[in-house]
Image (cartoon, rainbow, N blue to C red; front, side, top):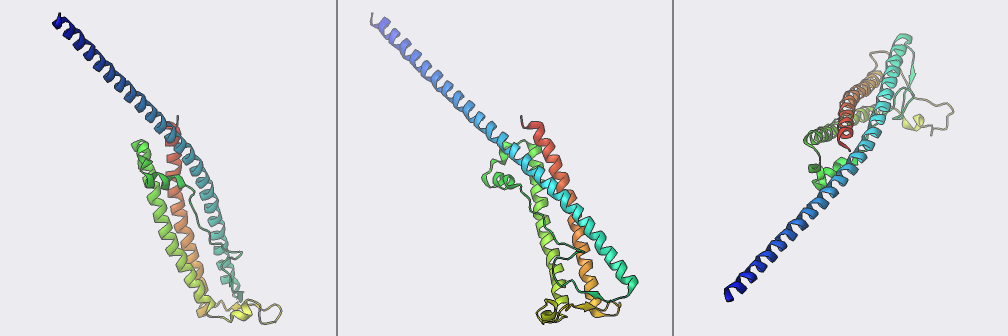
Length: 231
């Protein structure tokens, strides 16, 4: 009799243990499913946001590259016309001028920084991660090179300004129509500095154009990859 009761209790105990284990496994499975769903939702949100940011960058890069081409043409025509006329020209004493504009590109891909800082880049597929990292590295290199080139341009610009009476150049002398002029004969030191200044701007435009193309290509490739997997 005792043996039968002990056997029944043992069966009940084993049954309860099995039910508890099954319950734990089901709870873990549900938790894993919920976590997977959260990660999937977060990844989708990141993808959509990245596509939006990249599309904005691509439009900006296209615009800036077109501007650089326009101002490159203006500078070359300006040099050609002045060399042929051999007349004095007004010094462009300001950092913005009809013949050139120095613009910079600021990426709006803030989500990339968030992904890298939080470690959530691991949510993405390897092919996506590779493109994201390549784009980030290109953006960092661009910022370094552009900063260096722009500082060179501004240094040349300051060198030109130091050659002249800025009170007159800025119109504070009280003389109407006061204007700083440069003798453009090639043996003139001031004109050499002016041409060197324009040469540095052209060099900046070339550097920007090359990097814009690289960043734009990577951005377009990443957009395609993200759209393939965003669902």
